[in-house]
Length: 200
Image 1 (cartoon, rainbow, N blue to C red):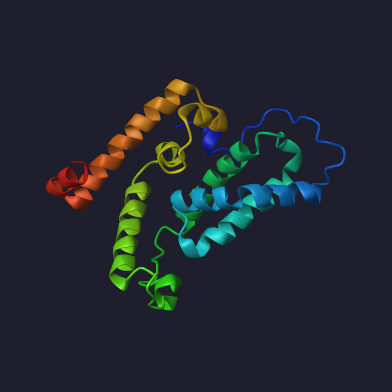
Image 2: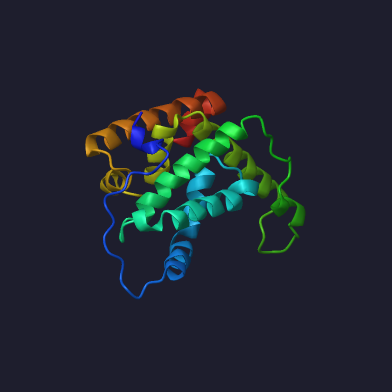
């Protein structure tokens, strides 16, 4: 496991000088504006439940605001993702036995219309999401972080290597292992026949 993913402080190179006219508040506001969706999705895919993702994202940005001088310009997404990994790891440890409500707010507030999905479609999506969450939860965090970036965020292996400060070979190796874990766990959830249909 790479120590950089689980250290108290994300690894960053010495900070470059910030533009003189950029105030701290402006830079934090810019980070939130540019990266909130990325951080929220990352946290969600790293095991933070929907109801807690906003709070976890706020925690990521509070950490970033306190460590703003350590974040080099142009490396913000790397810092925020590494911080998201730590926050998600803490969340998963503290909420290990927590259960999610049977129906989330979206299902409760769904009103039928011609353009909205049916309740059956919403339930199918919810089951698929739970299956994905269970599969991702089965992965060690070092594999999960790379799998999420590559398969769900569509980042290239070169981007992942730069973002996490890992050699390209390590990223490729972990991605192969993560895909293997994903397929093995998916087969256990679906069964071999259904998995074959899915990929045929």
